[in-house]
Length: 279
Image (cartoon, rainbow, N blue to C red; front, side):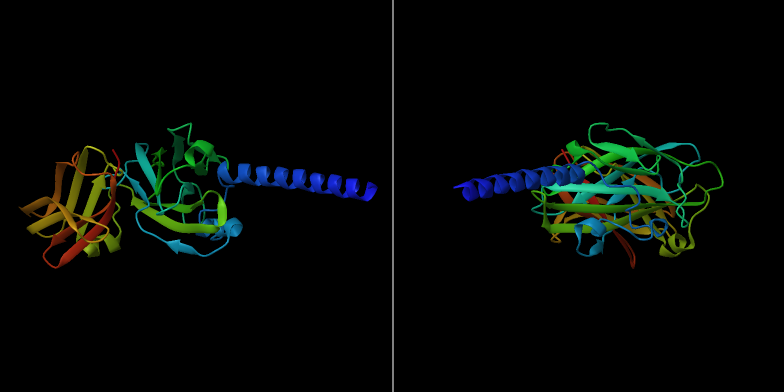
């Protein structure tokens, strides 16, 4: 009889310990990442896979901004948007840091959504809070960035994103994305060689979408909105445009919420960007 009681008590203690451990793990998982896991060279390429396992997949345009095509102005404040998109997932996280190639912090991160985001690592990283974890197929976070003082030609926002279903690590997905921006007057040679540069903002967008197109050559320019499956949704613009910068504002209030592709075609040049519509 005693042995049965002892066995029962031992099992109960183990269950309590396991529940306590699981709660601590869950709390740690939903309250932001530790500093230094953005996948940047300055962070020794560490990212979410260190804790969550699996392999990180590069993605494009998960970090976007309202920084003009011409570049940022030192000391100005800009809005940065982080979008984590993973179908059938309902828990999301991220960590982003604007850095130089050697890992130095560039500019200043500013929390604008105190309920869903927070800054750690002595101001170098911005990440999620518990209220910023839930979502359905996607999660979107916004924050501000104050551009560094004059003399900083290039800034790279490095970001690591993780998502899963109901907190189970077995279905975790980790993606890495970057946003490379330049100070006004310092355009990269790679951008000059592209010859076709489209900036869309705000992104995510709800009612109106601003298009800022910078072209090296004049000519017929067509900008269309497509679903991720390649179905055309809307012809945003079709004009014979001169070289240089053209700005247009498009009403997209009738477009359903979702993720789309904005494709720009000018002659033989094509540029494609992701757009999130969120009503």
